[in-house]
Image (cartoon, rainbow, N blue to C red; front, side, top):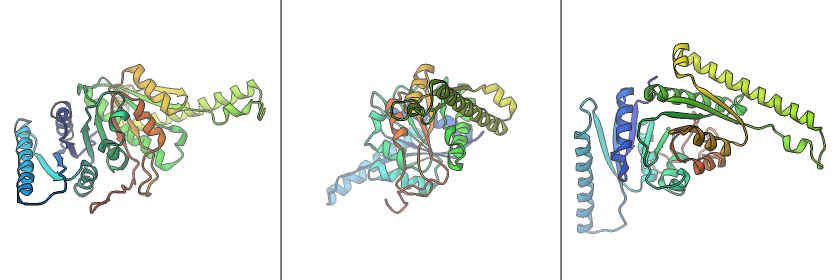
Length: 319
């Protein structure tokens, strides 16, 4: 499947020249997509001719630098470059809105969990407020993925927005697994609502056998929903492609913020494709605590997807 048609790579920091740029080139070639390199130069507030000359010189220096990188890249692609003024956020999101980019790639350089690298930074602002998928590549990402983990939530599958987001996640993860010749794993964390209260001194509403039966019914229901989700994916991919990918399902009892990072570690995931919790059409209500906690516990690259209909609180004219 060809997923991305207009890719934006944030040319910031040191590691973007290595893995992130090569990944962007590969995606652009595979998808026959447009690719733009963008760098944001944030200047302090000052005035006067010397300051203006210095600012212009620094901007021109960055343009020359990006042009040099582009010349050394593949001759098959018409790569564009942009140098904008101001902080990365919200300038990048305005560019996404104006130019209709459908993927933003950014490299992060810090160590530790992904959340520790980006919380309170431009990266987290992008994850929260960028209307298109955001790919945050960890330092040390080799660019060639062996295992891709798609995190879905079938407990909310009846909700049209959640159902559509699950489909987006699976289609993106499948497309990447095909292009990377990687294993595809799909994880869903399930819980039996009320399990901890049914047989307690507080309520004593069921005995142990009844609680066990209730939990098993919930497990079977979620397993069936997972199978239905895979069947819907097969309708998009085709049976031969689905058989080639052979997605491995992980339906595990527990809270998502614990289960997803745990599975990512156990399988050695190189990339996690996950959704961010948002309410369609309500600017500013972007990412839920669960998504942020998961990011805090992951130590691999992440492709974060918004639900269709998401409205960014940033506008082309300003936040």
